[in-house]
Image (cartoon, rainbow, N blue to C red; front, side, top):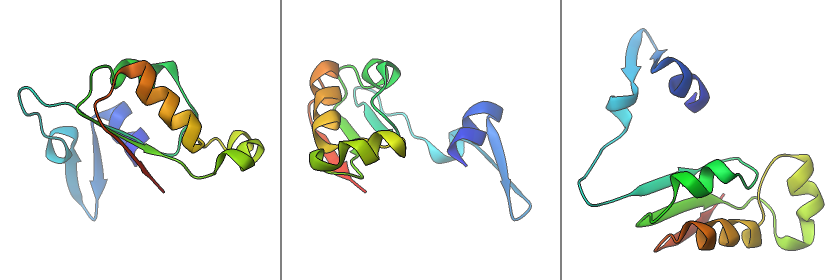
Amino acid sequence: MFQEISKKGHITVKGERIGISDITKKEPGKKFVYATDTRPLASTVKAAHDADVLVHETTYGDDLSKFAKERKHSTSAEAAQIAKKASAKLLVLYH
């Protein structure tokens, strides 16, 4: 859904049109970045630059990095590297 709403600016769910502004909130002085189901990307580093909070998925531990690459996910170390490169203030790992 996120890819669709990112491309089109809206999606329709159960007949209701939902725009990107309906699911995002801008608060002056605060930056929150949510990176889900992704490999480490330069675009994530750019988006998360100086973020107050970076929430980044870590489907696999570092010992399973082969599976992370095959399935287009990140390891905890990769997420930490993204946060460090981006100078994010807080990294939240999840999946």
